Image (cartoon, rainbow, N blue to C red; front, side):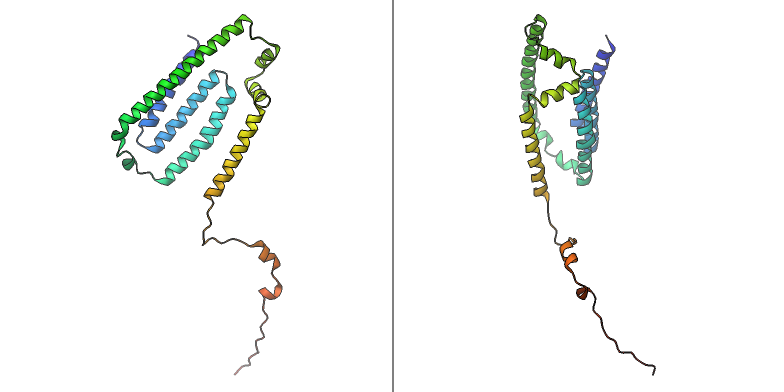
Length: 211
């Protein structure tokens, strides 16, 4: 057994344990922290598979941004865990059935993908799919090859996804924007247009002598 194989088994075992603790932890904050651990282990597995870009993105985006936001929301909402778990066992059979169906569907899709991948690898070894462009792309680093594919073959889908995300961000800001009646803000236009006579009034006070 090589060092890479041993590390794969270690990271996978910790990943499975963290995923199990995410759905069994009683404290929501602990569940979120176990999810952070699961993300780190998945990132290490991707690093072993030489998917450096996906590994770094998983740490920076999910661990560095999304999970921190989750922790802030969980701690600010003060969730009543006992109330949430009141009807757990009532819906457990239906949830277990749905979970088993999802696992079977994923297994069917992954088995088919593995078969297609094996056939493709065999064809590449036989020399049927070897082209100069494929060799040049395979010689590039992982991140560079991903960027070349995204911004050449999939340029229009990437741009469409960027526009959709921009519209979603604007819509989220517009939906959550609320104006409170007691909010005080500066009105720069009125401040600039003000005149001296509107601010200061000269009052003549007669002098009073000593009695």
